[in-house]
Length: 188
Image 1: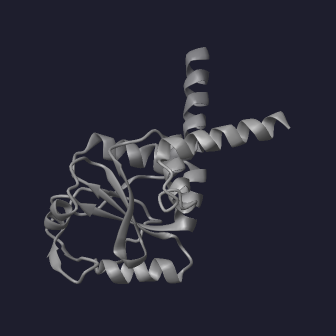
Image 2 (image 1 turned 180 degrees about the vertical axis):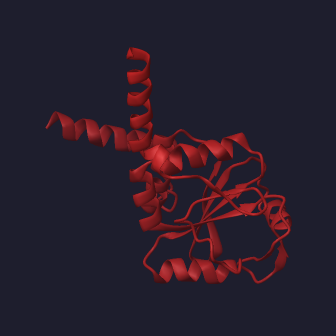
């Protein structure tokens, strides 16, 4: 009886946990996506960026992933299930995913047409997932090569939104400044 009751309690907890409520989706080519990503795109990146900026967002974020990538799966199953992360990222950036070895045609910010894999090579992306932030003019603003734990991943989005790269502040230093600021506020 106690084993059964315990199983019911665990089952109910899973039903109401945020991670269990959202399901990680896969595109036809096997890479992960989320329903709040910019999934309807002709992959004309200059246009996608312009739409993001016109909507008042800080820019366009492209995730480079590959089918079967365990770190990519973790990014979607952990980081992209956090309500705070989803709210901040979707409010502040347009996000899309590209298959780093894919064959879909991409029109780069400079108008050049190439397949996803060639665009990946052009940007010298070597890890999956890699998160690349683009600002006005299609300029790469910041890059996260590989997986980061949820609090640091969200912090990277806040760092870009706070114009940390444009101010010349390195990400570790910005993190330290944020930590010190919270400590000062707590002490007050």
